Image (cartoon, rainbow, N blue to C red; front, side, top):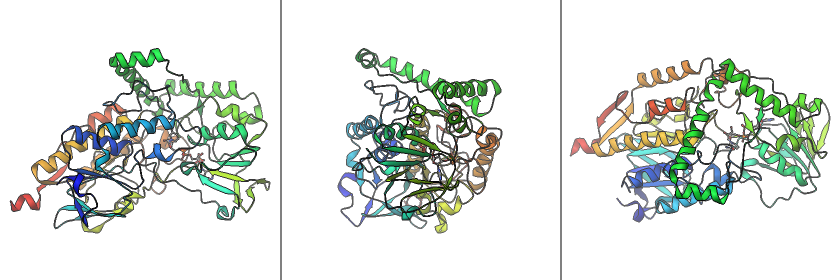
Length: 502
Ligand code: NAP
């Protein structure tokens, strides 16, 4: 059935492949199918345009902290990146252009929020109820991302605050903070980009820090016209740069395995950055982390520390007791009066909201299956959930490196897996024991990494089981070696009902 002609016009729309989400992963998946000549797919997107996290995170200062020549599709190099670390509008523009040039937009059903996806065991298809109608397909791919649903802090009294309050991922662009008393909760990757921007014109800015991050210099520069021209005329130079950046990141993995020489190098870099940028000893003490470097994301910034030293900025480390109508009450008993509060407190990344909506064999939800932490065969498929592929799910995140590499690895795996299902008329589902063996191997590899033994609490670990569920605990190249190509070992494969009847 042609997806173009059938979208949401009939009560039930049928297609071969349903993709949830049109961020980097969903869009890349769609392009991959399209380039292979597979046009029978629909992308369900709850928003009104493509872009995922790069559409939603529009806060001032938003930029990628991975180099753009690496943080882009290998199949769609962009010679015109303006600088090493491109700002958010440029990345969003790149995704929009990709959708347009690759003719994906005609496949996207915008405004379609998934309400429930259920495996119909009799018909062996996925039935997906959305806000705009029902969609059915033998193959379902979740590309909803793990940084798509903001996490709000559970601070007593926050709802009573009478000033303006919003999450970093839901920036209110009508808000002018100039001359206002502003608070930022959080000191993660988002906050350290926002703080220097707010500090410029806020009357007073208070940064509420729970744990100090490690910060290293941002080695950024603008690409000159000549450099961009060279990338355009000689595309192989872009590939060379991409390779160099990839292997540079790859060589940092031993830091996460706490190999002493590597640890000393990065720890030294962060310590001298702090020492050089913050002459005030008391402030430096507050900014010194109390856990092993790499346990949380290592942040890159040249303007965060200088912003904290401005006379209109305070770094508050006393801890938040509660919030009332006019501001934040600290555990020290002091009160910080505020007009505007920005919560830069991250995302629902350990217990993914999309997992609540996906129901496999017997009606079991993915969230229930993952109640002790996400786990998947080849980090992509789940027993009890036939013909279902999950992108950026369990153990696919990175401590250092480009998520696009992980996404493209999964794209290849899923395109081959979906092709196997559709071309042969079969149902595939990972064997329960194979899944356990695979996830055990991941947990074994996570032992000794800084993420589990570095003495911090992070969203990389499942809060209940303490297992490393968000990150891949090995080299990125190993992920591709293990999971870059679909193989039937470890799967139960059976003919589909339709094929058996034929
Ligand atoms: P995050 O890394 O999860 O940081 C959240 C911050 O909020 C942390 O400092 C945390 O403190 C604090 N926090 C959370 N709940 C709190 C509470 N109840 N009271 C006080 N403080 C609280 O979130 P994020 O900065 O949005 O970044 C999330 C992820 O997005 C990053 O890891 C990265 O993968 C991605 N990101 C990437 C870029 C990029 O340039 N590529 C930019 C932004 C974000 P603790 O540290 O004490 O928990």
